[in-house]
Every structure is written in C-alpha cells, then in structure tokens.
Length: 118
Image (cartoon, rainbow, N blue to C red; front, side, top):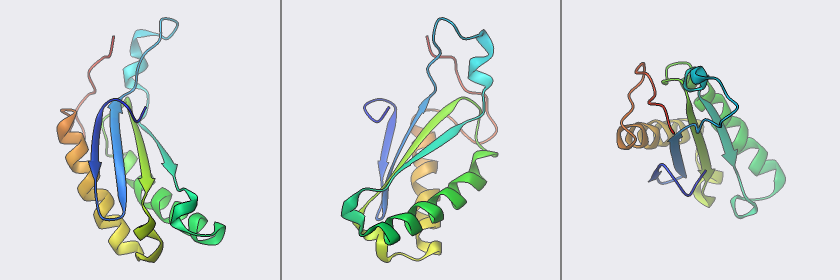
C-alpha cells in the first residue's frame, strides 16, 4: 500500500492515499466500498502508553473525515516521533493538510466518485 498512490509528509505524520484495488473476484461496484484507514504508530513515537494515545487521537480525527471522503480509497497514516508531544489540535491540523494534499495528488476531492483501478 505505501509503495503506490500519493504520499504527503507533515510535521507529525506521513499520509499515503490510493484508490483501493479491485481483485478479479470482486464485483464491479468494489470502487463504491467505503474508504478505509489504517494507522502505523511505531516504537520511535514512544512507549506503549504514548503510542496508544497518538493512535486514538488519529483514529478519532481521521474516522470523522472518512464519511466525507470519496468511496473506494485506502488511507495509511504513519505517525512520526514528533506526534508524541503534539496536542490533538496540532495532529488534526496536520492530518487535514496532509490528507487534502494527498487527495489532490490522486485526483480526488471529498464527495467525488473514485475511479476504478484495473
């Protein structure tokens, strides 16, 4: 996933976005599946308590954004070590900026249909 699509780096995270691939066994409407997000918060961010707090904050904010995104997108958010000391507003602002830029790079805007991927 992180080797394809658009990648945008911010102060506290790196966001990867790509249209979800469809496999041969899936119906043609696979691109209409809801967008989904995954989170990577490695040990470099801090001890387990800190990593879990960062992951919860990112899940909360990006989860709210998913319903406004076009269907059929895969999103990966990788937290950087600076995310450990960032407050919720900083993380949310960085996530919005990175996600917006990544969506522009893959040609998507909130509310537009996702192109089908062969």
